[in-house]
Image 1 (spheres, helix red, strand yellow):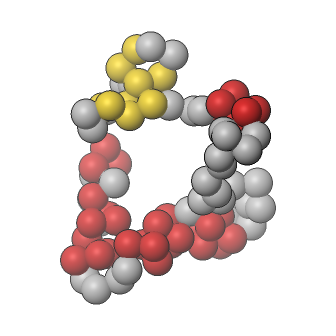
Image 2 (tube, helix red, strand yellow):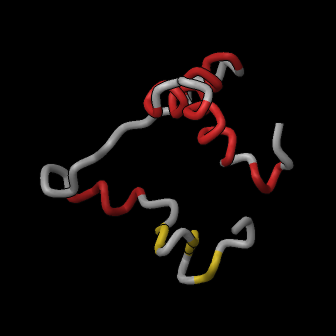
Image 3 (cartoon, rainbow, N blue to C red):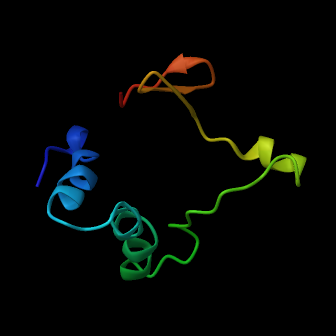
Length: 78
């Protein structure tokens, strides 16, 4: 367990314990969404803007240098 603001460290702990990075990401996304019975959450789905330019309209945030930016401002959760 990690404090809420350090929850991202859980992925690193899973990998350190021997889980593959892909499985760790799945545990925190699609597997978690399935347990919550939320089929609208949890997808890890890369989209190629060269194939579908509308993918550029689906960006929730930009990460630069380990910092999360939303709408041009530093995210308060960072």
